[in-house]
Length: 71
Image 1: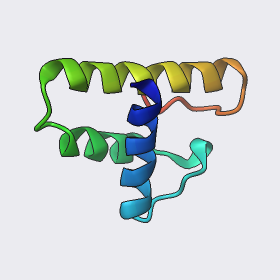
Image 2: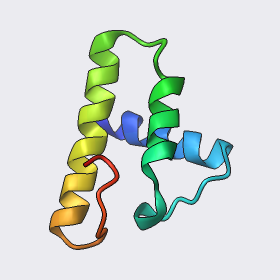
Image 3: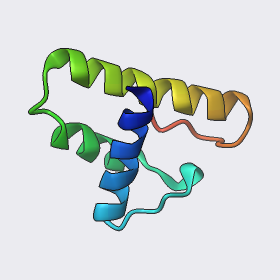
């Protein structure tokens, strides 16, 4: 399920022609993505948010991204 969540985020970014570079993903792009999935069940939305949070927390911990867009 988590891999599907990340693939859906990548698909969204590609569709909008946003950068796929993790360090270039912005808070507004993520907000737009969350708005696009607002039709899903609350449980699905929570899982997708949790997946993205864990990804960016890991990237921040590993110093791959300096600014975590979810903070």
